[in-house]
Image (cartoon, rainbow, N blue to C red; front, side, top):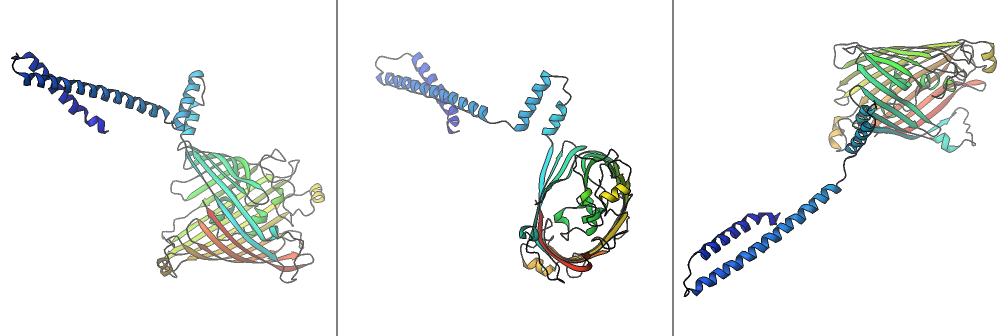
Length: 465
């Protein structure tokens, strides 16, 4: 402040003038020296003026100090400090409160919020018969959309909360919402609403990460992705990451599943419901061998589950699954970072039946199985990347082809019996988290009285945020 710089000068001048005044007053003044008397009067006047200025300066400093103190008192405190004070106050009032430490860690936790959006349009039509049902609602026949929110809060290195909730035109569903205890790389525990660890696709599913928008038929009918249940799971991996495992104890499927017409989706229960007291056991054992070549990566796993599905807890079902993922690349072909991926999964379900189930659910199959094989090729010409400024090192184009098959025992004329699908897709990723897709599917299935080819086209957009 400019006024503070004047304080030393004013004090020095005031001291010199005061000293001169006393020195002159102490000397004998001849009556004839009028000039000296005048000088003494002038010095006295200057002393009074300097004294007045010092007093005014002191008053100004006091006023400024008061203003500064008021401004400091009006500055709002941080919420975390405010909550800390509240918790400390509660702890003083109730010293036996064991949750004070928990609350303090909670307010200082690391919180992350994000999600994803998927939107697009599609059309299904039987091109052989050239019939279109005019009564169909075009909003339902042509458009679909999905919006998901993901949340994570880590109180410390060991305890955290994870949640994924998504919405589509028909429902709001909890993909997962659990509390995680990260005890050791090989032993970790999570409890809440969890994804059933059966197969690779259901465990890792997120719309923006998929090269094709539509789920494989095995995960549309047999493993009703997203398949989540309330329960508790134990999981981990070895120190060298060669082996991984997950075992889950949870609710399971109910009556109405294993249908030769609809698959298992109708057997899904609400996460707060269970039709019997016997739990479902499910798990997956993964293996990632070291191939010794940087451009090769292999991940494979075996899954299994067992449970009871009738209201009397007498009829059992079980399932087995196998999945494999192979990546080759990056290598130089169309671009400098081309990549090839091969993915396959096989699923087998078997269910016990009795007279009551056959009467109430006549299309319940004793066994159903299916598989899919998918090839993906990712590329991008380097000349394009250099020519356009908004193309990044993560920008890619991709071609995909998927072959699918489903069959059920005992129902030759059911829609899921001997059903075959072929899908050809193309996608573009301007950045790693965003994808634009278009795909065309040929579906060979039994309809009415004969097998026919249906056709489906989908165009979609998905992104993380």
